[in-house]
Image 1 (cartoon, rainbow, N blue to C red):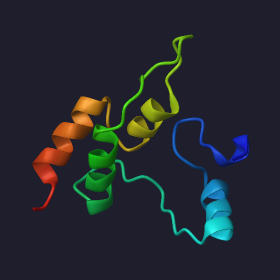
Image 2 (cartoon, rainbow, N blue to C red):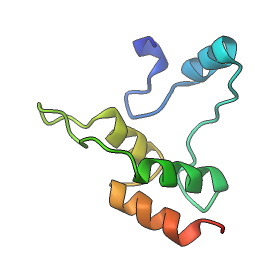
Image 3 (cartoon, one colour):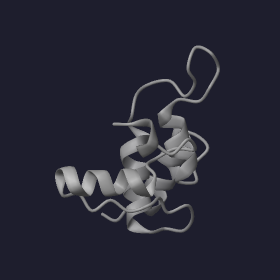
Image 4 (cartoon, rainbow, N blue to C red):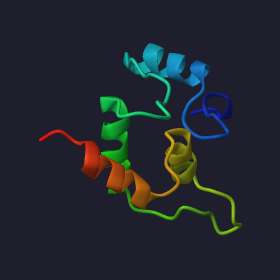
Length: 89
């Protein structure tokens, strides 16, 4: 994936989403920052269990941390709590 497809604040750019649509047939949508949208709950549940650091050795945030921020979460714990509160059984 090229740098132009990655949003520097986390996630994919519009160009990146179009790239995956052409390449794999995916229908990716931009992040939902607030509310209890089912996509946001699903993202929170997936990322709540994701292992790995939130910062690189040089102190910059990892892509994981940037993606969480793009979806409106400040940490893995906040995503986990949100998913637990809002998931449907």
